[in-house]
Length: 93
Image 1 (cartoon, rainbow, N blue to C red):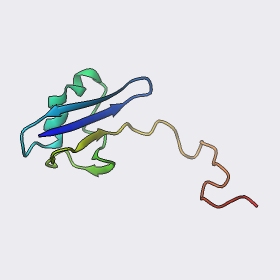
Image 2 (cartoon, one colour; image 1 turned 90 degrees about the vertical axis):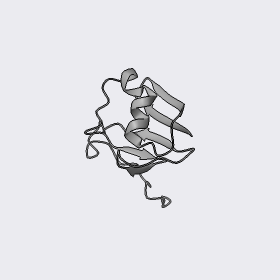
Image 3 (cartoon, rainbow, N blue to C red; image 1 turned 120 degrees about the vertical axis):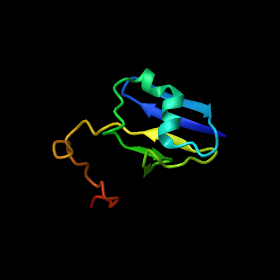
């Protein structure tokens, strides 16, 4: 079955389309994709992964057409980032 594996860093991003057997797990797909060799800084013991934006475990079984996403850790402190006015969707008066 055909699936995708996506990962992005600030200056480099990759989206790989690979063929895997049925009943392949997220971890196996990531390993087979070669993305861990391309980005040796990926640490699957701490980084979260998902399928189409929904967090999943590494042992989740994939379905044809799934896109596995490896998420980077947050690199800024949300308390130090200025809040945008009207960020709640309300219009300013």
